[in-house]
Image (tube, rainbow, N blue to C red; front, side, top):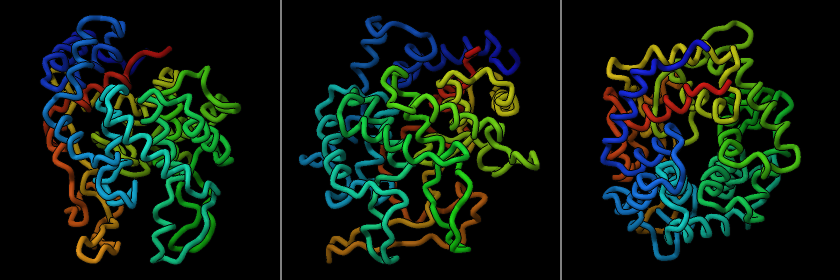
Length: 370
């Protein structure tokens, strides 16, 4: 099919990835791209080296003995320091499920989540009531964390199974999901799904053996993928125009955001990479490849926040902080005054340079799944 990587360039990219100092990059390249067995000596060596690699080891040491990162009161805020974001990233980096910090952090999150209201749409709270902002039963967080916890081998935990069931139950009629239930500008109900809210549940399902999907899971996946494909992964289904320019840029990590690379990666992982409607996105991704077979990180969502919640260590009170003057069509250009980024992110690459994680994800996304 069209939209595949030239063999020579693919080989160049793979060789480059296998030389990377980060064992996680090597591990995923060996398993996801070269499809080596888990018992392969190189695979075992790379996997065993992930948790002791400098930036990862330091991040694991930042965990509180009780099991959380950031502040124990909240697993979600502040971004990107809290427990949710730590587990999401560590799962993507490939930290083994046997790591004690992973076990403790996962259990800390699950206890917090298990004690929350599961209703959707969620209960309404006053703007300054943090209970409304702390809810993690919503498509983006539930999807993101279901994926991370499945990667950590917890897919049979009843609490994780409930997360997948919740996602099926709360899928919208148009096939996607949306974390927003009301238009903040108009005060009216939202009637259209969100790309950002849809990609997380689908990513979660892609991490789980289809035999373990809950009742209705297959139908939910098919409807969700159809929602993305009817938009060709980044275009209006009515006008054919690009919905957001930022979605055409290549990022890592994604947090809860979206771009064509993540869309293609997930659709391909779910077995729909050969659909003709993915061609525009595949061709665009291919066009961004560098002569040596790698792909660059074109932008970052690290400092894209309009709002964050932080705790005043002197008073113990939580309050919101705002970033002013952001062009919502170009969030990644934010100066980022409202977020303190953990040091591990500096090890993940620089904007404008060839990036191992973007390259790895591009190879994942462009695998021929026909």
